[in-house]
Image (cartoon, rainbow, N blue to C red; front, side):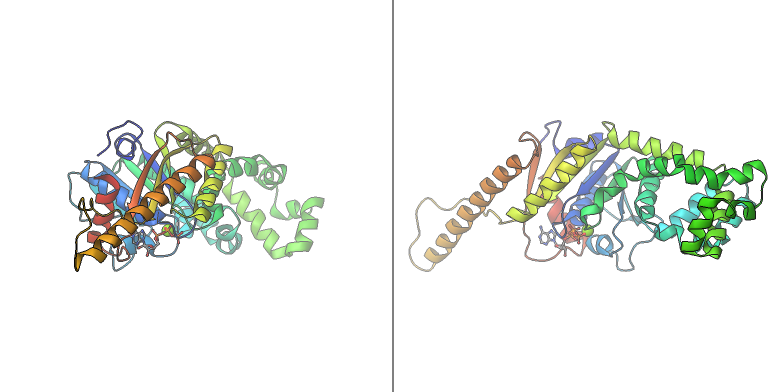
Length: 358
Ligand SMILES: Nc1ncnc2c1ncn2[C@@H]1O[C@H](COP(=O)(O)OP(=O)(O)OP(=O)(O)O)[C@@H](O)[C@H]1O
Ligand SMILES: [Mg+2]
């Protein structure tokens, strides 16, 4: 096991947050789950959170009933703990409203509001923003000391990094201020709808939707400061030394090019790749005997040599590609072979963990 302070093990021991990113199907979920398994063996209390609505994490962890928005603890070896959850945007939003409303009345007004029920959860950015909020809450949750984030299979997977900035810009937006203002001045909803800019919006989206939206923002008044504060806190957390980004790729040119995209996306946000996992590599079997045997063993020997050559070439090519794509050459890289079966049980996941770390 590598003990270099930039190794995956070092990150598992030292980090508070690990984010697994990479292109679709490369093994982000599998790696996130295997990191959780290793963290528990290292004595940490880890929680793996998936933003991906597909049931892949439950699959990788061998949880037949699936996962929910609340963390469930898994029975795994080690002195630590492993928990897992699947983010549900709407439930998380409801929870936030309840936790942050000044009183139960304010919470109920928001939760019952038509705009909130039908629109707020599906507004672009809400899912990403809720992921950021959830990260904030899990990080502060005394049950856990490591949060491992499994990102969804899209190029926008890292949009949750923008979410805190987006909410800040939204709250600072003049329109938002305008919508919030009337309650503060004790005016009525109708007066707001009489504002020229809102009248125009009302014509486009419909008067009822607008009235609901206005009522929603008015009910929300007072809570925006907390939202803003948490958004800033998450940004700070992600940029601090306790957060590390693990880039997952497979040893094919196209997925490594995608990895480059993710590395670039992180760099844009002043973040860097802390470790790379190249998953589904051609396995390298043991050392071949010194001489080619005769008889029936000869084709096996040839096969072994062929596989070893393929594996070595793959490593060279992948390493060269990674270096050429903006991931610094000194970033720790782990190589995980392609197993004969998909990873749908804790035993199979253990096989990935062993290859990742031992
Ligand atoms: N090293 C491996 N050997 C064999 N099967 C693997 C390996 N790594 C992952 N798999 C399998 O490949 C499939 C995709 O892996 P996984 O779901 O982890 O990828 P992902 O990057 O999270 O995908 P998505 O982008 O769709 O979320 C799964 O069925 C998983 O069990
Ligand atoms: Mg996945």
